[in-house]
Structure formats: C-alpha cells, structure tokens
Image (cartoon, rainbow, N blue to C red; front, side, top):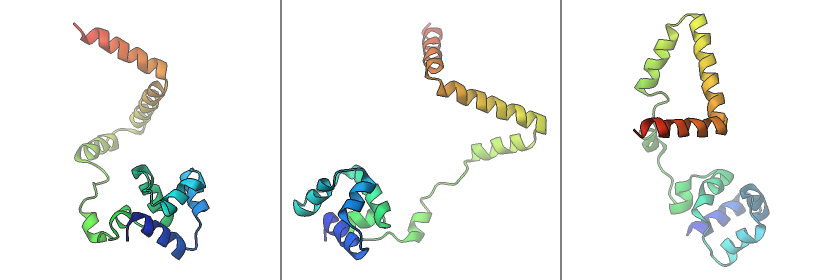
Length: 132
C-alpha cells in the first residue's frame, strides 16, 4: 500500500470524507481528489496535518509501519536544559521583589522584540557600533 492508499484507507475506515480533510488542510476538495484519482502525492508540508487529522503517525503514512513508542522516548529532548535549570535556581533564590523586577524586565524585552521598528533600530545601531 502506498501513501495515497493509506490516506484514503484511513479516511474510509474512520467514516470520514475527502471534503472534511480538505477543509482541515485549508485546500480545495479537488486537490484531495487528485491524490486519489490521479495518484498525485500530497506535498510533504501536508503530511503532518494529514497524520494529525487521521490520528496516525507521519511514519505510518509514509511507510505503513508504526514506530515503537518505547523507541521514540529516547529521542525526546528534556523539558529543561542544564542552563535552564541553573537559571531557574537563580530565580528561585531571589526575593519576591527581585522576582517581580525580573518579570518586568522580561516583559519589557518582549515588548521591544514585538516592536519591529525598535528591532530594526537595534539592528542598525549594532551594525554601526560593531563595524569598526
């Protein structure tokens, strides 16, 4: 069974329709029809969303095989890096007033980043100050 056959087999097994998949992917229904009738492969960018819609893994869609869940666990990255943990410990040791100041500083930095004019200004300043 190839990729397209697996997609339409899953749609059929789940009692779902091509138009539902098209709506989920935000594409015209005729694109889904091409995958089925003309055996045109879906673009690689759609595979994650198709897998999500069908509640199957991307690997299953591509190969027909499921990856053993125990095997995938060893490849997952930890929630926090060592550097993150060190920063959290530093924050933990601050007084509530100091924590509030750190929080305000973070909010301030975020607002600067969100402001594209400020971001462009900072890039320009950096360019001129480091070009010596």
